[in-house]
Length: 269
Image (tube, rainbow, N blue to C red; front, top):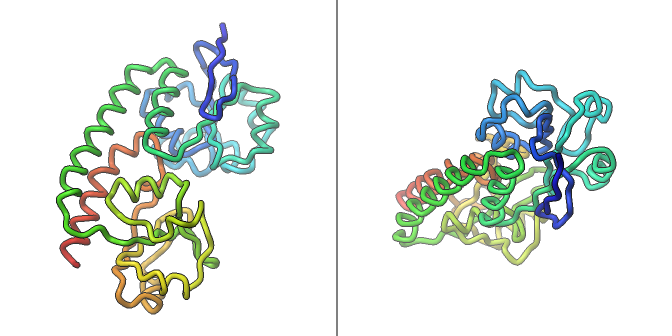
């Protein structure tokens, strides 16, 4: 049996009432499926779906998040494919949806992420497990917020996602939402999405704190020293990009991580 559902892109998707062969094209949503207990039902993942490690090593990979091996997908005979508007390629998704049910998320805010968790829970018959997870995430953020809003400073932050060219997370991104939740002021809030910036723009913006993400570009300690020459007065930190950009069950780690990051900055400022 099948039924019609509406995904986060407001598309109608005809899916089985009991999906048995799921392919996930987004790392954070792949991790969520395993968290919800879909170990057997997930038959395909991407090469970037690195969590949980045991599944990364054992599950067939269908390509990256932008380019897929269509023959591999066909051989896996999926009855549900789960993707995301930003992380997946529109043209390739349109090709897939001609052959298979494709449910898409579209996430900018924490509310969007929690809605995605609930909707995927419903799709895969894990609604109660999804609801428990959502409650845990809300509680963890609330506990962190209680500490963060007591702090004196609201640091002005630049969040780097790429090098050569330098690119930062600006407004209309989930990362921006997470910066806000952590009590930071994104100095590039007037820009949209992931703008390219120059050293001169960065220096002129005078950030209190620069966060260098571990993904998609893997910033290292040597990059801290390079950027320090541009902003000698800024506090520059390497941060876990998965915490700021993954919107599944990894959100359980976000509240405590943000609280500790803010307390650390407060101590040093």
